Amino acid sequence: DGTTWVSEYFIQDQFYFLEDKFALLAGARYAVIENFNTNKLTNVKTNTKGEAPNPRLGAVWLPNDWFSMFVNVSDLLTPQNGANPDGTTFDPVAAKLGELGARADLLNRRLTLTGSFYDLRNTNVLNTDPDRPGYRIQTGEERTRGMEFDVVGRPTPQWQVIGSTNISNAIVSQDTGANRGNRRANSPSHTYSLWNRYQIEQGPLKGLSGGIGIVHLSGRFGDVGNTYYIPEYTRFDLALSYRKKTWDVSLNVQNLAD
Image 1 (cartoon, rainbow, N blue to C red):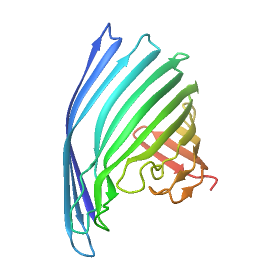
Image 2: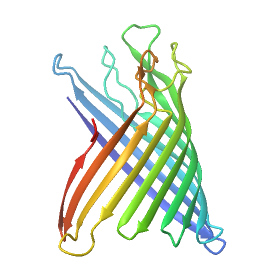
Image 3: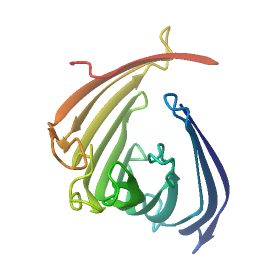
Image 4: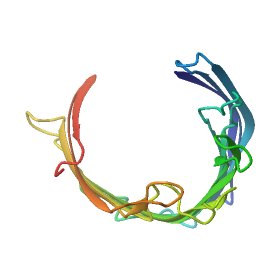
């Protein structure tokens, strides 16, 4: 049994230059993460606490009213659960993200295209302790580099189309054992999705909307040792919703075709 508490304190501001065509964003966030765990079999309690500053820097350049380029760098902490047999706990995972991309708004903003390159590094990843069987140490690093492409379109005011593609190379970049250079567990190299949503805005069915989507994931390894492989698959999803002034109800079905 466990509980996680996260406290964050942040300040952020944005500055504009060159007749508002160039914007700089700077932020500072301080995160405190605490984990409280109890082993119900042994009644052993373990507490974990990690804290660190998480800076965020970004810039946007708008040479005209339909095209922009952006870059951002940010840090993030993620809590880790569990403990070693002697009760020692683990620090949060520290993630560092860098991204460079561009966005275009076309056809009177009825079509938006976005593309970006990114580099994500997770440090403090748990690894097997080579000197103590059954123990783990935080010396690992996982690195993900890739590209993302997104398209959002409105062929009509009621019909919305959203598509995305993610192509990535996710590997174990540091490890105490033989896993260095392996693919990250459960990380497909290619992901594609397409979603259609239609909303009725007039008549007795006003407020009713429906959507159908398709998601395709490439094959991926199921563990960090890359000992077994999960084949690629394609999934169809369905969504229905109805909104009436101050309330709404929705039904979502995943893997429609099994």
